[in-house]
Image (cartoon, rainbow, N blue to C red; front, side):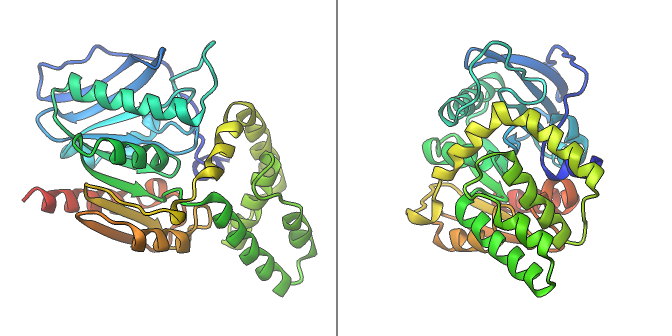
Length: 319
């Protein structure tokens, strides 16, 4: 079950706590709640305040990463002032009686957190590192505020969910037909794309895992379904909004450097689609990093390699 929760990008909340920020010290290691979009939202800050500011935008939606920061950004925290933000309704940023997240609300929250952090830490610019769903917010910020963002790191970016899922579906059905696995073929053919509900999402993920050699036992799949049934009411409406993103249909122009990370085994956001997107992408500087032996979850399974690459490109850019 631990593996499943990591792969599906849904992080459970840890114990709620907060410390007062020590802005007068060079080294910062603090957590706090800030008022963003009319709600109290949680941020975790660690690093050296004299170093460049870096905002990490987690995936999901609904998969806060602050409780995993020791794995995801521990190296970067030696060279940057790294902020993990639990987005509205994720992790410690509970919704309460506020409206459920929509794409427009989340984009506004991202703009607000950008402004808040720059003002609080008296910085002119920041680096944005965005993972999976977080790249939707990251691309928006990079387009709208190029004067406030030094560079964008896009990890497993959302390019076109419908095309990606259709391509994955075709690959899986071809694979299981060759093996005469009627159960897999029958279940996959029943999946609706775009996903209509979490059952569609769960079944495709089940056979992706099997395809990669990590089959999910039935008892674990039942737990997985239970967890996603709880996720569905709040997050499925936002997830469905992501089908409107068709990044390959339009010119993609950024005024800042963009660094794209993709796992060669990614069947979630589509390795091939990301390559096409990268070729179209226009930026003063761009670089593509293809990580071997990893799928969609680069921050979880290739964390050290990812962080070292990010640090190296940022160090070169500042020479």
